[in-house]
Amino acid sequence: MSGAPAYADFARRQADSIWSADRDPLNRIGQRWAGGTGNQLDWRTQASGLGALTAAQ
Image 1 (cartoon, helix red, strand yellow):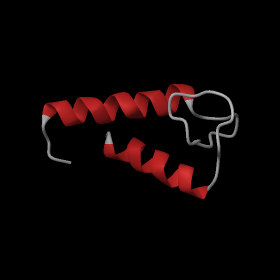
Image 2 (cartoon, helix red, strand yellow):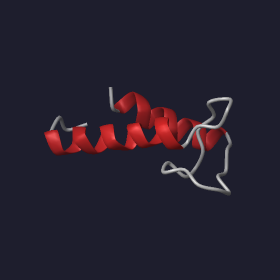
Image 3 (cartoon, one colour):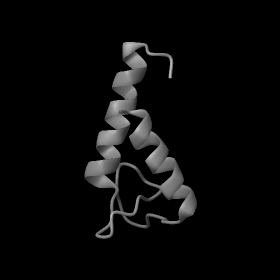
Image 4 (tube, rainbow, N blue to C red):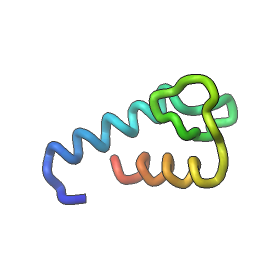
C-alpha cells in the first residue's frame, strides 16, 4: 500500500463492509463484499476477502 490516507481510508471501508455484511454463519467470506443474495463462496473469495482484511490493518 502507498501509505496515502485516501488509500488507507478506502481499504478500511472495504474491510468494514466485508466484516459487517459479507460473512456467513461460519465466517466464510463471499464474492459480494457489500452482502446480498446469491453470494458465491469458495477458496478464491476467501483469499480475496482475507487479503483485504489484513491489508486494512
